[in-house]
Length: 121
Image (tube, rainbow, N blue to C red; front, side, top):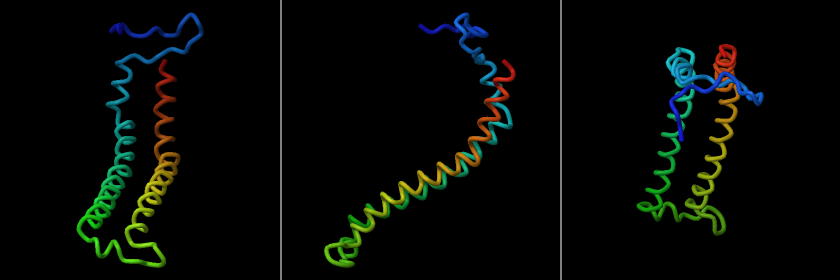
């Protein structure tokens, strides 16, 4: 059962002190946290929209352009198969790009916010 009482400032068992709800709200409303969210959104939203568009193109072409998608490129490999494999490649590429972006841009900002919160305890 949850209570509205703030967590203790460090347990007798040696556990670290926990921030209060008010401290979390204060950080959430800070310009530093707003910048972190803007940075995340500037990467995630455009890439999400682009990937959904790419996926819908694949689905629509598969449904309405059967002749094009069935065009053999070499052997039994057709355009639909290449597009399908490209979906997987794109997924892994986006995950790799996000990992690099997060390490370079998001993690340092998040770590700075975390360090500031821990210093205030």
